[in-house]
Image (cartoon, rainbow, N blue to C red; front, side):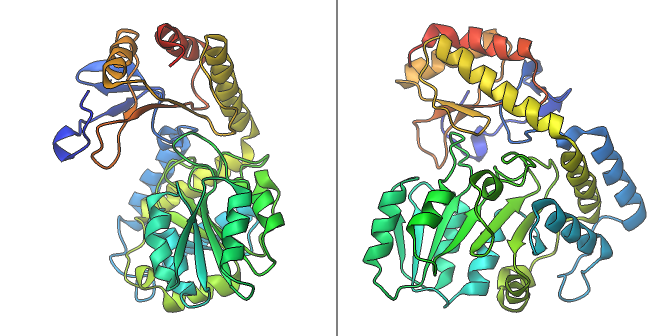
Length: 371
């Protein structure tokens, strides 16, 4: 396992049977990636992709504002708006660019941008597009956010940028507390790539799980994680959709996602809409793993997301954990972004893991408690 991330360090993985991967000719149990319901390999989704390819071809090869619009995109936007109970949805080429198209559409409308200090890189890139000073606030800290907003001045028009569910540890932004503490003029741009489809009773994401209204909340989602396909979506008002169409260069200049993937996403959304049991399995698996790790001596926060982050004390210990995982037949999900040598293990649970899978993981980690 290489610890420095770079092109030369990337190695191929092949998903097998929804819970395993092939790596270096070995079949290994897989606790990584963000395909939380394994929709990327669901037979019905794959059939829809094949049907879309046969019926529509691969690519519209043009911006949607020229000749690249297609009825499948309109159908998918309607399905997204219905699933998330949003007034309007706008499909974009990928999840990363969702916050950028919003920022370009709303540029000049805010005096300050307040950004969670651990926000995803997509939000960091988008923050500069608003044309306003950007200030960081302490991670998931409502009082710190309130204090930062007050420093902006009485007449400030503020927009807050935050992840919904944070991918590094499964924690969730306290949106309800944010809305309660900040002035009524404050807007919120939530990158809910990991929360969409996962959090909330109906899987509508952080907005639903936190019980906040959509009047001043813009929710950005991706179709490449819980929904297992590809593409991004902005969920908001009709006025916001219109503004993006008129003002976002990133939207105007992009070719939309391939039509077969849009066809697959339509089926994936319908499956998740009707599959309360899959969400129950996902959260049951996550809760069971966290409880077993705590019983083994690990300190595991009770965050809502199906993610467990374990930070080794040293590179030496990280290598020992890696060897233990491989001996147990588990792919070691050691993450290290941006070329930094230090990293951590991020274990992601899916709805398709079994109790035996979870027990295998706990046995492999037990010798290293407490970290």
